[in-house]
Image (cartoon, rainbow, N blue to C red; front, side):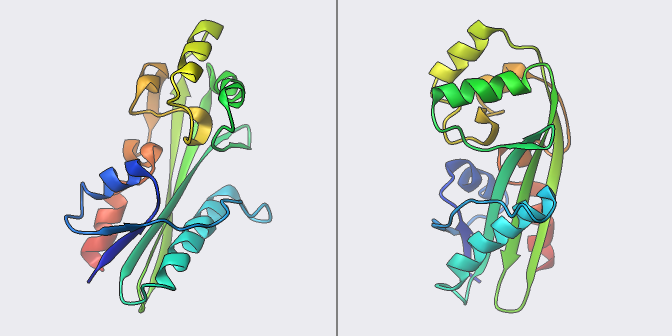
Amino acid sequence: MEIILASKSPRRKQLLALCVVDFKVREANVDEILDESVNKVDAIEKLALHKAQTIFNHHPEALIIGADTIVLVDDEVLGKPIDKEDAKIMLRKLSGRTHQVITGVCMMDQYRTITFSSVVDVDFCVLNENEIENYANSEEPMDKAGAYAIQGLAASFVTSIRGDYYAVMGLPVSQVYKHLKNW
Protein backbone atom coordinates (compact mmCIF):
# COMPACT_ATOMS: atom_id res chain seq x y z
CA MET A 1 0.00 0.00 0.00
CA GLU A 2 1.26 3.44 -0.88
CA ILE A 3 1.97 5.68 2.13
CA ILE A 4 1.67 9.46 1.84
CA LEU A 5 2.78 11.97 4.43
CA ALA A 6 0.41 14.96 4.35
CA SER A 7 2.94 17.60 5.33
CA LYS A 8 5.35 20.20 4.02
CA SER A 9 7.61 19.83 7.07
CA PRO A 10 11.11 18.59 6.24
CA ARG A 11 11.42 17.41 9.85
CA ARG A 12 8.35 15.19 9.61
CA LYS A 13 9.70 13.72 6.38
CA GLN A 14 13.00 12.89 8.12
CA LEU A 15 11.19 11.41 11.11
CA LEU A 16 8.83 9.24 9.07
CA ALA A 17 11.88 7.92 7.19
CA LEU A 18 13.05 6.43 10.51
CA CYS A 19 10.22 3.90 10.38
CA VAL A 20 9.02 3.84 6.74
CA VAL A 21 11.33 3.11 3.84
CA ASP A 22 9.12 4.08 0.92
CA PHE A 23 6.60 6.93 1.08
CA LYS A 24 5.57 10.06 -0.77
CA VAL A 25 5.03 13.56 0.55
CA ARG A 26 2.13 15.79 -0.41
CA GLU A 27 1.53 19.20 1.09
CA ALA A 28 -1.91 19.58 2.65
CA ASN A 29 -2.84 23.19 1.95
CA VAL A 30 -5.17 23.81 4.87
CA ASP A 31 -5.64 26.67 7.28
CA GLU A 32 -3.91 25.66 10.50
CA ILE A 33 -6.61 27.06 12.76
CA LEU A 34 -7.36 25.26 16.01
CA ASP A 35 -10.96 24.58 16.98
CA GLU A 36 -11.34 26.62 20.17
CA SER A 37 -14.55 24.79 21.13
CA VAL A 38 -12.66 21.64 22.16
CA ASN A 39 -9.64 20.92 24.36
CA LYS A 40 -6.18 21.41 22.86
CA VAL A 41 -5.45 17.69 22.37
CA ASP A 42 -8.72 17.16 20.49
CA ALA A 43 -8.13 20.35 18.50
CA ILE A 44 -4.65 19.29 17.30
CA GLU A 45 -5.91 15.80 16.42
CA LYS A 46 -8.77 17.41 14.48
CA LEU A 47 -6.27 19.52 12.54
CA ALA A 48 -4.17 16.41 11.77
CA LEU A 49 -7.36 14.72 10.55
CA HIS A 50 -8.16 17.69 8.33
CA LYS A 51 -4.68 17.53 6.76
CA ALA A 52 -4.94 13.77 6.18
CA GLN A 53 -8.48 14.05 4.77
CA THR A 54 -7.38 16.73 2.31
CA ILE A 55 -4.76 14.41 0.79
CA PHE A 56 -6.96 11.31 1.09
CA ASN A 57 -9.57 13.01 -1.12
CA HIS A 58 -7.00 12.91 -3.96
CA HIS A 59 -5.40 9.54 -3.07
CA PRO A 60 -8.14 7.26 -1.66
CA GLU A 61 -6.08 4.14 -2.39
CA ALA A 62 -3.24 5.20 -0.07
CA LEU A 63 -2.54 5.25 3.64
CA ILE A 64 -2.32 8.92 4.60
CA ILE A 65 -0.47 10.26 7.63
CA GLY A 66 -1.22 13.81 8.77
CA ALA A 67 0.26 15.59 11.77
CA ASP A 68 0.47 18.94 13.47
CA THR A 69 2.23 20.31 16.54
CA ILE A 70 1.48 23.07 19.01
CA VAL A 71 3.33 24.51 21.97
CA LEU A 72 1.25 25.36 25.01
CA VAL A 73 2.26 27.55 27.95
CA ASP A 74 -0.31 28.66 30.55
CA ASP A 75 -3.04 27.36 28.22
CA GLU A 76 -1.83 29.78 25.52
CA VAL A 77 -1.00 28.27 22.15
CA LEU A 78 2.32 29.41 20.72
CA GLY A 79 2.17 28.77 17.00
CA LYS A 80 4.76 29.63 14.39
CA PRO A 81 6.19 33.12 14.85
CA ILE A 82 5.28 35.68 12.23
CA ASP A 83 8.64 37.47 12.54
CA LYS A 84 11.72 37.79 14.78
CA GLU A 85 9.92 40.04 17.28
CA ASP A 86 7.15 37.48 17.66
CA ALA A 87 9.78 34.76 18.14
CA LYS A 88 11.39 36.81 20.94
CA ILE A 89 8.04 37.24 22.68
CA MET A 90 7.49 33.47 22.57
CA LEU A 91 10.99 32.70 23.84
CA ARG A 92 10.49 35.08 26.78
CA LYS A 93 7.28 33.21 27.66
CA LEU A 94 9.14 29.87 27.59
CA SER A 95 12.19 31.12 29.52
CA GLY A 96 12.63 29.34 32.85
CA ARG A 97 9.32 27.54 32.46
CA THR A 98 7.75 24.21 31.73
CA HIS A 99 5.58 24.06 28.64
CA GLN A 100 3.80 21.33 26.73
CA VAL A 101 4.34 20.26 23.16
CA ILE A 102 1.37 18.42 21.70
CA THR A 103 1.65 16.59 18.39
CA GLY A 104 -1.53 15.18 16.94
CA VAL A 105 -1.49 12.49 14.26
CA CYS A 106 -4.10 11.03 11.95
CA MET A 107 -3.63 7.86 9.93
CA MET A 108 -6.31 6.93 7.42
CA ASP A 109 -7.03 4.67 4.51
CA GLN A 110 -10.26 3.63 2.83
CA TYR A 111 -11.09 1.22 5.68
CA ARG A 112 -10.25 3.09 8.86
CA THR A 113 -9.16 6.31 10.45
CA ILE A 114 -7.32 6.71 13.73
CA THR A 115 -6.14 9.80 15.54
CA PHE A 116 -3.79 9.98 18.50
CA SER A 117 -1.46 12.46 20.11
CA SER A 118 1.67 12.76 22.16
CA VAL A 119 1.91 15.30 24.98
CA VAL A 120 5.42 16.18 26.12
CA ASP A 121 6.49 18.40 29.01
CA VAL A 122 9.58 20.47 28.16
CA ASP A 123 11.55 22.53 30.67
CA PHE A 124 13.55 25.56 29.52
CA CYS A 125 16.36 27.23 31.41
CA VAL A 126 16.17 30.95 32.10
CA LEU A 127 17.17 32.82 28.94
CA ASN A 128 18.79 36.23 29.05
CA GLU A 129 17.97 38.91 26.47
CA ASN A 130 21.23 38.28 24.61
CA GLU A 131 20.41 34.59 24.19
CA ILE A 132 16.90 35.41 23.02
CA GLU A 133 18.17 38.02 20.56
CA ASN A 134 20.89 35.73 19.16
CA TYR A 135 18.52 32.81 18.76
CA ALA A 136 15.82 34.93 17.11
CA ASN A 137 18.45 36.24 14.67
CA SER A 138 19.50 32.70 13.77
CA GLU A 139 16.36 32.24 11.62
CA GLU A 140 15.91 28.82 13.27
CA PRO A 141 12.74 29.87 15.15
CA MET A 142 10.86 30.66 11.95
CA ASP A 143 8.30 28.06 10.85
CA LYS A 144 8.53 26.24 14.19
CA ALA A 145 5.75 26.00 16.75
CA GLY A 146 6.83 27.86 19.88
CA ALA A 147 9.68 29.50 17.95
CA TYR A 148 12.28 26.83 18.65
CA ALA A 149 13.79 23.63 17.30
CA ILE A 150 14.75 21.17 20.04
CA GLN A 151 17.07 19.40 17.58
CA GLY A 152 18.89 22.62 16.73
CA LEU A 153 20.47 25.52 18.55
CA ALA A 154 17.66 25.56 21.13
CA ALA A 155 18.89 22.21 22.47
CA SER A 156 21.00 24.21 24.91
CA PHE A 157 17.83 25.81 26.35
CA VAL A 158 16.15 22.50 27.24
CA THR A 159 16.91 21.26 30.74
CA SER A 160 14.62 18.21 30.57
CA ILE A 161 11.76 16.61 28.72
CA ARG A 162 9.14 14.12 29.84
CA GLY A 163 7.78 12.27 26.84
CA ASP A 164 8.67 11.49 23.25
CA TYR A 165 11.57 13.62 21.98
CA TYR A 166 10.51 13.03 18.38
CA ALA A 167 7.00 14.33 19.12
CA VAL A 168 8.63 17.64 20.07
CA MET A 169 10.28 17.62 16.64
CA GLY A 170 6.91 17.00 15.00
CA LEU A 171 6.12 13.27 14.77
CA PRO A 172 5.93 10.62 17.55
CA VAL A 173 7.89 8.00 15.62
CA SER A 174 7.35 5.05 18.00
CA GLN A 175 3.57 5.56 18.06
CA VAL A 176 3.41 5.86 14.27
CA TYR A 177 5.53 2.72 13.91
CA LYS A 178 3.32 0.79 16.34
CA HIS A 179 0.21 1.73 14.39
CA LEU A 180 1.84 0.91 11.04
CA LYS A 181 2.78 -2.56 12.32
CA ASN A 182 -0.86 -3.18 13.24
CA TRP A 183 -2.26 -1.63 10.07
